[in-house]
Image 1: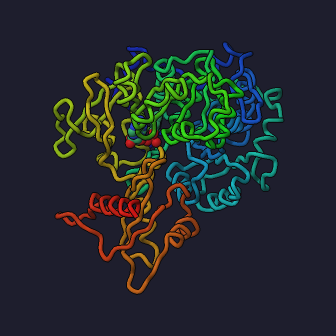
Image 2: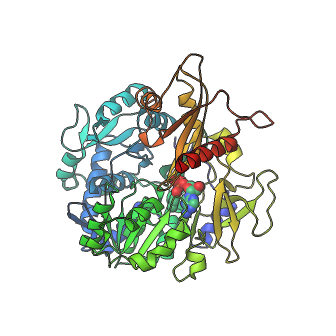
Image 3: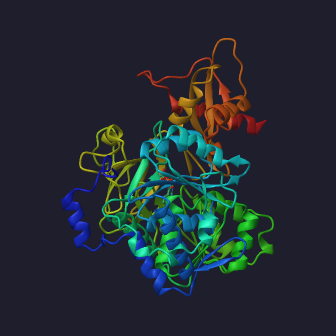
Length: 553
Ligand code: OOB
């Protein structure tokens, strides 16, 4: 039952959002279907090899997949883990899943057994869409492991033409025009008040959480984002961050582009050279980028060999854009920037087109919806801080969830009794009414927009026989903003290298590579606060000092 463990908005709020027209009671597929027909002959998607799919193609092929999925046994509200890297096939598989009335779980290609097994068992997933073989990793073998431990897992969909026995090739399904034999009209229609997709939390506690986004909330999320970003039929948006991530999928992302008749240029790599080639070749107007990618572009030695004059706007978020970098965009690239402070849990703050520079370059935006409410509070007392003072950002609104999926106990801590999501971000209010992100009081590392839960890594590390105690903190990094540093107290007589722990985390604990510590420090004991908790602030200071000293050497 999808409803068990899902927390809906209270009835009075739901009524208010509906009355104001924010919630339309259409499913995401219904909204898209309308656009697929309206823009039928236009190009919707351009792949890296230059293949173009029109809106009519997307419609026909996603319907075809939906009917196949349905025939393979996928039912209304079934959960399907998605892990195919950015490609037209990944887009079609998402759209096909939604059209089949099922719920995609938006995992990332680097996730490995530890993460996938957790999502599969927590959600009771019955489908898994994977690449056949990517970067030397055998996803079909992983699917086999998942099937052994997660008994609900029946349908495995594989990109490419070499599925193992019992698994299904998505390419083969796409070649078989099943819609000529079976009517699409028979596909089930989900309730727009129930989850449409399960997003992943950035990770602040040990175990990653699932985020239920309903059709009503998520549709408003991407339609309003598209409006705030001024999208229309003329735009070409380049997306290289993983398509499943909320930013790339629905802020405004793929769904926002499709809702407004533009085209998406999709890239599976973030190599700057490759991205510059795509911008030039497809006259890209909008580039969705985490700040690391912007730096890559600005500092690339061969930038002047490419014609990037089509680029009008960079949409950036995920981690903080340094104003020094923001200031270079107009003179060096001739384009504008729109900042977004977003979260998979729903809140979205945007700077607006036409805002003065002091707002666009130095703040992370204001709420995207007139119905969004936010508070900046003292996390200790839960009281609002004085305007301009630093506090934790709390949010509530028509596209901000009221609870994580199947996480009753944690929800009591992550949400206020009156339904505000406690973001864990430390912000202050700018006189313009926008927020400025200054830091956070949640225990995670933001590696160029990729979030790593410190506690999750510590729980794995402590299982190493040579590790007596450990703590993971962020260390500063020029390009990524932050990277993961592990402090370890060794068991007596033991020795350990960074390579050892990375090997252990990958091979034994089977976690995603982007979460690996990039530096190891050993201590005789971890510093503690006066209440006896590990003093992470002191650890961050130790590593910063050490790095400073090394720089001077
Ligand atoms: C986006 O979503 P998540 O869920 O991967 O990460 C959310 C966290 C925020 O709580 C904040 O700590 C950080 O990422 N963050 C920013 C930021 N945007 C996100 N920190 C500083 N400046 C920003 N502009 O990252 C996300 C979701 C939708 C759109 C854009 C980003």
